[in-house]
Image 1 (cartoon, rainbow, N blue to C red):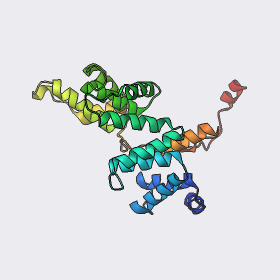
Image 2 (tube, rainbow, N blue to C red):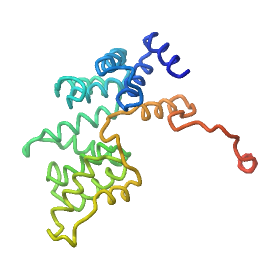
Image 3 (cartoon, rainbow, N blue to C red):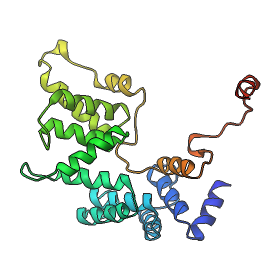
Image 4 (cartoon, rainbow, N blue to C red):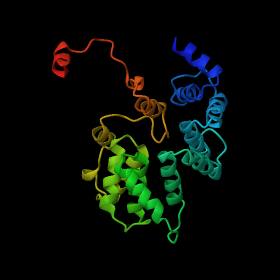
Length: 238
């Protein structure tokens, strides 16, 4: 039984199990824990230098999601993860500085990191870069580029990006009934899914995928086939 195995691992103070159980609670898959118990598990995992847990705990403090908001504590946790070689933590630190910056602040290094991270597929970097082009922060204001990066992030399920994309389109569309758009259909066409997990930070699925790559293992977060491979495919491979 999955939960018995998970509970046994948690009792042995396994940080990955602690993080997974927190994630199951957060995603609404398991209500056996209350919010406080879930955060306690996350904190225990973070104390063992479990990088995804540190990043997620930082997100909770930065946003005030499940704990009292303390942005500096959130950033400090991300810096701790950054020292453990986490690129995701570096992106979050850079993004937080950009979103909190004033027009005269020097954020060249942060912009450089965000551009680099966007090219390697970071959704947060895509959204942040769109915000920069949208508001002329660290780059020349460029609405077409803002639309591009908001759209890229929205296509991958980022609800915040979709809301900003909608705002930009609404601003340029004539205020006339014949130009009115059905945004619910637009989002469905844009992503082909209805995302229920906007901006959740590092998910258990991302964690499991990374571990599968690190250990050259089967990625169970993507499901596991219960049928044999095609004989023809095996023949072609051999």
